[in-house]
Length: 398
Image (cartoon, rainbow, N blue to C red; front, side, top):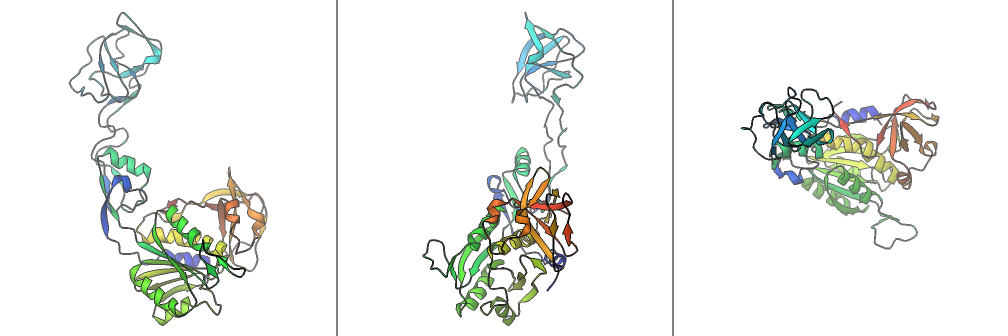
């Protein structure tokens, strides 16, 4: 059994997946990882323009005469503001030469074509200068960046309609156990519905991964064949159940029989001790505990950040939020602990003081975040500052 920190160190040093690249339409680029650096080829803004609806003026003249209008989208590169002239101009329209301020409509009045300005303006007022946001040649998006609406908007500003990204690995998801019944089937009193697979797939989708649900692994002779077949098709397999030490927990035996590399099996962690990480036939196995709470917390805390790295994202360390712990917490047995709770306005309130069953599932609906404490913590004092993670994490390069 290894420590939580040792497990994280192993996870963040696993060999990355070898992924092909593909060109993808910008409308489909959300959540993909950029496979090249992209630079600004058109300055932002592309030209000096008006930030307001108003009048282009030169501050040297106090009561200029309004002579014409420049609309957004109009080529005004040959228009020069003459002495004592003002030009009506719309937001985003190209600035005429010699103009050094925009007087918004709200602070002006017009009589017989003569403009009066009721408020003093400074040079450059309400003007967006060429390149003030981004200059030509600047890095727009970096290889390894997970694309979202912020990056996609910038890419669109440069006219990119196709983006070179890494292909997403296909992740196979299994549940396991003879006691598990699929949702929609009739479950007897001694059977339980398949909670883990729908939850795992929902989390993978939330983090923009491609996955396929592969069904329930039964504790019989079919288990080995299904595992071996899937390991040749998928680059990542996520299982839940079957990774502990019970009589029917066969996954490790099968993997070892076929010379898999077992990176670790069991972490000194509550909940989630039985987790196993292995590799067989170029396929990574993340074998989660069967208890729903343990499985989902292991997935969020350990597997999701690892998947970010394996898929070539350059930011994969979870971004911690600082919070004050609302209650005192006490830990036993020199082990790491994951505590569910609610984060609100800088305060983290542990759910039921951290005392709930590892098979619980309803607690996720009652919480929005979790905190991880390694073995060195035996007590957290009330109002002590701690690090917490939201269910939907952001990532950083360190």
